[in-house]
Picture 1: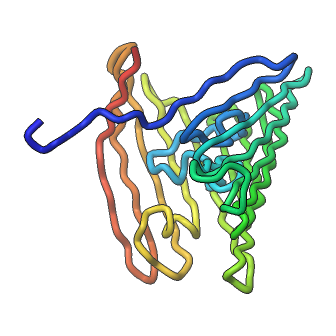
Picture 2: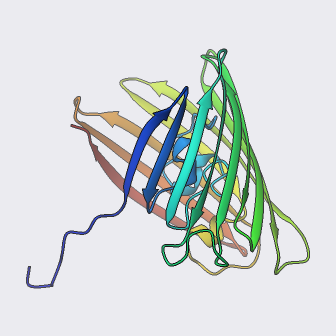
Length: 231
């Protein structure tokens, strides 16, 4: 168009069986693409989508990625992988490694993960339990950053409930939402998240939501409506 817009490929992946395991390789691919996780909370803000464990259970990738998962009988899974920048695969550059062990059934689930990005390592735990009135999810993650003397941690709690034809979610999380949202804050921040996903039809879901960021003594409110298409 007149603004020079072009169509680009965001990433490419290929998954295939290796015996009883599943292998995933790709470019611009997350290691956690093979993880099971145990977070039933969808989340209106991206940070909430991994129950606050986006650096461990929801670990991303550095570029070129290879990961593998294996599902045991009874609901247990184990998965892990490695990701390297496109410029140097498994060289002296900042490679990423990840490992997850998880269990889930129809009522509850729990996942524990470890990731190492060379300059920082993370340990995360998330879980859910399906009560009669709603499904509750929780998460906790600790970070050990080389440039910092102390470890830092985050937490999350959230509720998912079917209300009428749609799904209502309410969540509360802490800490590195500041880095995720790119606001450059240095103190612990707290994030409140509420949304309602309404299925208009089989192909379209409308989700209005609100996010409140409480950081450094000030509150900032974000509101939006998200439309999701499925074909």
